[in-house]
View 1 (tube, one colour):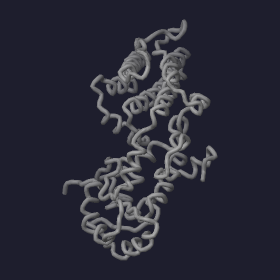
View 2 (view 1 turned 30 degrees about the horizontal axis):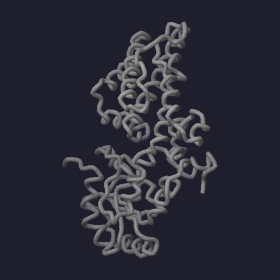
View 3 (view 1 turned 90 degrees about the vertical axis):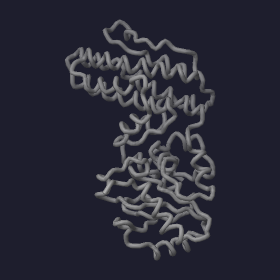
View 4 (view 1 turned 60 degrees about the vertical axis):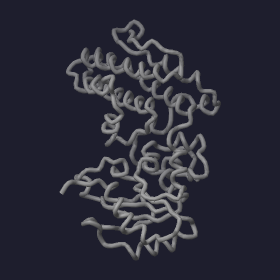
Length: 339
């Protein structure tokens, strides 16, 4: 039998099982929250654990307990051969059906209730993967409550976006000369590692330039490929990680740098910047001079709350621990924003 993703499976599950149980109550429902299936990346391999017809049902506070009772007692044990389980928070693998208010579910997913507004600190401390859990999943029904939040979370405010671009260019500026320097002292492994880090930084820069949220590491390459790269950026980055020697590695990196520099110019958010490579001071290292793009982007940011923060960026740009990035209470406690 040909594999059907959870999003497609959920269409029938919602129509045949969930909608009749909920009845005439106003609600929204969709494949939301954790999981590869929310992003549409699930395959037959995904079915070996925590996979099935999954849906989050969002109702008014006064209807939560009644709808939970209706759904819990009316759910079949399985749907089209897949086990069906009732859960409470919608974030634990194996919980296929969740009933909650929009605010409670958003607090569990994001760490705050985005339906009440999104503050600057919320944008900066909410991982992109968690936002994708709200905006990327398939929606089966909506009385308007979910769409409004998805639109509000669709992308960063303009000045936040420009500041994030500056911070991502800054990551490249910090290490672009190290690929040559590590090679120069005989540290070939170190040169490869730094190059790999820079490849990921360029990929994440490309997501920002495309105004597209980046998923967590398992799906970063898949999502990057789906951005589309008519200019060959994907091939250049592949050549970096496949390079057998330093000269190949540097040449491929310089190609990639020039391509994202040209993409920057195409955005039209700053004056055009020369995208050609250049030496790093008097050293035999060719770089793009990423700090030039940092300064240009920062010059377009006027919000003093951002300009005072320096160049460390949003949480995805300085944290890389799954336990932090997947747990709203953890990452908000980390910066004193838990509430």
